[in-house]
Length: 517
Image (cartoon, rainbow, N blue to C red; front, side, top):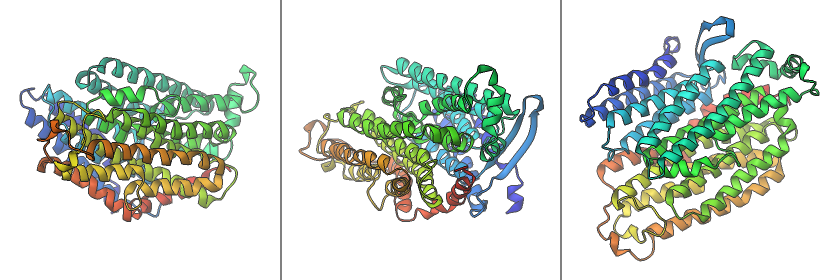
């Protein structure tokens, strides 16, 4: 096992999709199957590497493993510093599962397939790099790398409003990235380091705030103000990515105009980069400003949860419904993160909330990408129709399709026995003792979610059959091969969440011990 840990597996995993993308870009655009074959071969190899890490990691450690550290630009405090703990490993597994699933769901894409597949591989490389980097400069390169292929995938293969959606997506995320960059440049000027672990240690000993205050004393701000301003800048970068209300307005249009397989990647993994940033960077590096601004942050989380569900209830387009549903589910993650810095409650409550956050990130990634996959299959059969009122009674002609999509919808609803339940349960278990008022105000989100999910089931699958769809095809064997593994995983994690919790709990317990509360 130790010999495996000594191998540069993270570097191999990160640069593998880049090499694959270079190969795919060299394929003639008429050789579509070859491009898809190379892409899936790279995806499968990447999944194998992540599975090897999963089997090799010491689940009881909670510390960074598979660490690689090399000098890069010493004069700027830049290192090639990568490593994995439970959070990083779970996020790598999510990216390794969702991206090949999205590629397999792209069977109907015929235009410039080598470019399409190569952009997906670039996106995967950006995700792998961002989930493992421990130096801000290095991390920021991969954060931005994931933005570029996503922009072109929307711009070139999206719907009628794809240009506006791609531009809006790019502008919003770029503004957030600039704010994030300025915040960490400020931290570097105060501390001389971009290293996440060093910055977290300074925050743990409560030395980071005074260093920032001393560096920016010339501004004449009061004690702690400069530290709080840097936190707000970093917060904006991640708030746009999640997104946190009211920075969410780019998401519904982007998800609805992007090709459904691209929406799978956006909601399944890319949105998790935002929550990952809250947990990996904001929580350990800015605990004091987060605690000082706890009440307004909790109000924003509650608004994200509740308002997005009512917005979903008002939609008539399936992709927009799922887009607002994604905002709602990630709002629970933010609620758990913010509650973890509350001065009330116990370490056990914080651990439960943060375990729920990480588990919800993984479970929502699987479930949401699966739902967008079903929408892709629905669009293929209906010449692009996806309106809530366009269908009706489809369970009579496509019972397998109906049954499997129904399971994914019930998972999104949080039905016990499926993976969507346990993450939300742990979040509320932790949040209720920490900030009971925020937990209570968030509960209507669960009720309204049930209403719009059941509305989708009733409108699309139940009722009298619309004769227009009398020849609607049931799920094919190829489509079943795409969705069945994710469906099985929903059941496995619903009854055996310890499969993931065993990996993340030691890491979460370590975070909680480090919080200066």
